[in-house]
Amino acid sequence: MRVLLVYPNANKKVVSWGDAGAIAEPIALEYLGAVARSEGHEVRLLDLRLHNDALADTLAAFRPDLVGLTGYSMHVLRCLEVCRLAKELVPGCKTAVGGHHATLEPVDFFEPEVDYVVVGEGSRPFRAILAECEEQADRSSIPGTYSQVDGVFRYGGAPQPFDFAVIPEPDRTLALEDRKDYYIDWMRPIAMIRTSIGCPFRCSFCSLWRIMGGRYHTRDLDSVVSELGTIAERHVFLTDDEPFINAKRMFLLADKIERSGIEKEYFGYCRVDSMLKHADLIKRWRQIGMKRFLLGVETIFDGESSGYRKRQKREQVERGLQLAAELDIHLMCNFIIHPDYSDKQFDELIHFIEENKVEHPSFTIWTPLPGTGYADESIVVRQPNGRPNWDYFDLQHPVTATRLPKKEFVARYFNLYMRFLSKYYASDGPMTVALMQRMLQGVLHKAVPELAAKAMEGDTPPVGHE
Ligand code: B12
Ligand code: SF4
Image (cartoon, rainbow, N blue to C red; front, side, top):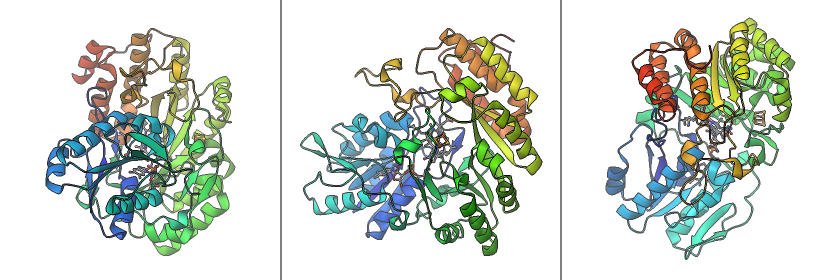
């Protein structure tokens, strides 16, 4: 069979900056591609973030028997569009969707243009879907998969237990020509690798621990090193929810990587408490190339932190920032901006970032993401069918009511980036600043169009209450 794997692009009417912040390796599709190729199918990967307009031509020329799509919540509606076009241009073509949103809110894909919705890890269900499509067999019995039979979606039962040992390595040759274009910030080209999945913590704003039922699965270290050895890129991002949970394991992995002679520059998530508890481990990883962490500071307000169940205090964050500076680890620090923020909280946050010389602050707006258990009624952006308008779930738009008038909130949010623009300039170089400005314009253009226009002219007036 011919199998087309598609990574969707963001809706440019909502996120006018498109995918400007990062376009990283589509590793989920490379996992599925490996499965399909091992079954003897002809596989192509189309990354619509890089090839915005190539969908119709690719469908018409390749005429796939099956189209597989991945996506975050912000990609739901685009995924459905892709499925519709696939069925229109290639009659008889089957469609399958998976990824974070499909796992947590499969109902959004229960539409006529979708044949399979996969919950959780995809390798095993995808192999079964391929077999069914090939044999044109009766459906509805694949574990972890909703199959459409005569317009009704039937669940094949709980997914099989997660097991790294049965998942093949991602096929990195599928996107060979695109590899040079994958990047996160200034790290280009960048590859991704998974060494563990799941997280023992229970942060309330995060859905990742729920996806894995609170369990933490680790991969065999020799297989990690062997896969790493096949990666050509110098920059490597660890997709692990939190890699530094098990210090002993990570010491061993560092030793094995060093012994193998592999030299890379790593980037990945790290909790502040992991850093503080295992400073010696972080030092060791710095020696083998860990250059940068994505640190979820989330909030500097201790009350809010306990509400988030983050189990982290402001004082720990401050010590973490100092430690990273001592160890020469660069930090991208993410702060969650709650829609309930008042001017005072925005001001305090700015003060904190300045006082602690946070090198690369990044900001996301608190969003009731699928799987976080937050009441759906609080969502104010809706599709005509009453479901949330997922296009806005890029964490850069408020999707719930704001305490400040919405325009003021968005302006203050925008101003956080503008305020620290020089930091992006210092760490990332002019290219990233241009991208950042495009992104900011996208965030703003709906709520405060006149400011968005000014930002694009390079005129960046302070807004809010400075
Ligand atoms: C790497 C990563 C990034 C990178 C690269 C992003 C990129 N797309 O280029 C960076 C840091 C830049 C990033 C940015 C963002 N990210 Co991000 N990111 C991740 C992370 C850590 C890993 C994703 C990954 O590649 N995992 C490894 C692959 C193999 O796993 P997988 O995707 O789950 O796929 C498996 C299964 O889901 C299934 N599957 C997946 N697709 C399909 C399809 C089919 C057909 C089948 C059968 C199966 C299947 O099988 C796969 C193999 O096991 C996750 C958190 C996490 N640990 O999962 C967040 C995560 C995906 N990100 C998230 C978000 C929200 C974002 C941002 C929007 C946040 C922001 N505004 O700053 C941006 C968007 C950027 C963009 N334009 O795409 C959310 C998505 C939540 C949601 N419901 O939408 C997550 C889950 C984190 C979270 N906050 O909970 N991200
Ligand atoms: S935010 Fe990080 S530490 Fe908290 S549950 Fe999610 S992955 Fe774990």
